[in-house]
Amino acid sequence: MFPTTVSRRTSSIAVGSKMSLSCEFFMESSSLSSLWSETKSGSWGVFFTLTAIFAAFFYVWSCMRESKSSRMSPPLPPGPRGFPLVGNLLSLDSELHSYFAGLAKTYGPIFKLRLGTRLCVVIASPSIAREVLKDHDATFANRGVNVAAGDVALYGGADIVFAPYGPEWRMMRKVCALKMLSNTALDSVQELRHKQVRKAVGYFYSRVGSPVDVGEQIFVAILNLTTNMLWGGTMEEEGVGAGVLAEFRPLGKQCGTSRSFLGNPIFRNFIRVWPGLICRG
Image 1 (tube, rainbow, N blue to C red):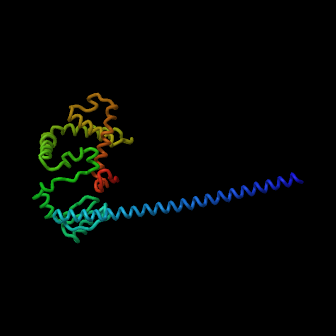
Image 2: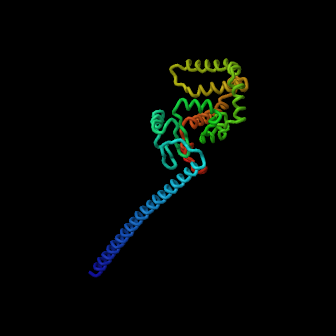
């Protein structure tokens, strides 16, 4: 009887100790979870508070900067008031001509828009547009550099498209007009263009019913035309294999990337608070 009693007491003590340990573990886990939830909610509160303080500080700074610039510079045309940092980007409509016509009825034929940190002036009158583009064309000849495209392929806007108006730009225009785009220069390569077009059309005709890569053939035709204009021979005529052609393909992809940067609206071109803090889109 005695050994049996001792074993029962030992088992009851063991069961009791396990229950107490499980209760203590449950209490510890519940306290840790509640502490974690309180810390998490507190961190979100601190985050939202800092965000609100930063937004208020930036709004006051932008208002002070705008008032200071308005005192030092001539008055700007009227226009809708935008939000801090983004300006009027959020209010733009996909039908820009209708959107600008509506703003012209409210603010007149000349009004301003803030696209991010950039100030833009919109002219909605044909007579004023003729005066700006014809009578004062030298004053408004410069263009805003497309930051994304300028960093990729345009040497920071030093090409003929985005270069500032001056002696260097006039020299580049003279070279393009006389050496590249003149009637004599275009007529001299007319046969080359016709030859490459006939070759591409013949290739497509020979592959009727089979899938073809149109972009690849157009790239080859442009590359052959370019090499023939520069060196007097195409890739096939010079005996260049497919390995060299494959090396030229990344160049074509980079050119396509540059064209997409030029044509597509990118937030990096509009929102630039500091040089190191640039928004990409």
